Length: 112
Length: 116
Image 1 (spheres, rainbow over the protein chains, first blue to last red):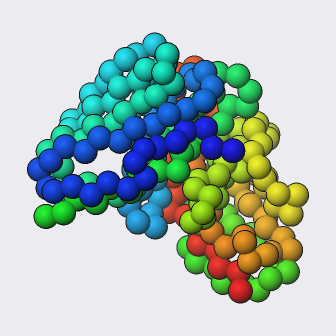
Image 2: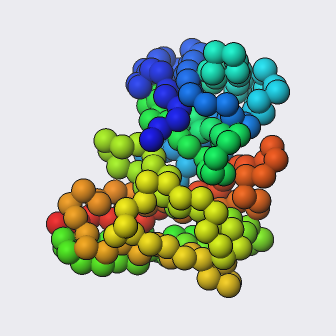
């Protein structure tokens, strides 16, 4: 079963605008990760945020984590056409099996 | 290039057949994970191995099996194939079995299976 659910399922914006994607999850987690997937390709790790962190930055990426609401957001600033891809959040649960569970993803399209 | 190698890249077969997908993890990575990605199911975790031993199991069908060999490469065997098994199958590797606060996975490019 899916742990994370991304919102929106699809997002289309103009180049230069900011893109925000959200992820909600159900159980207590050890960390939350964001991955990017270009069409039909393998997933690429973007950023990891631990359960005791609230915000993290990496280049044009900003990730927030609210464990009380069991939610995270990924902000991509000054978007570029090359950012067009699907973005997935993934969570590692504290309890149970040590597996990384992915959401359904947000399909981001950047229009030039 | 993630350093994870998957073969074959594409595979077309018929219902009822059996296929084997192969994965070579990044040099030094002891953990291997298998995921299935289909259009209507997203990315589903199948199974994880760490240094040859099974560590975690997801919703893997009984018709599917996997193993990790002493040289750390892994194989995913899919048998009695059905139309619904058509999907992208990804292998990923990591240094540690998601212990502590590490856990970045490195994904291969996937094996696209089409069952006709």
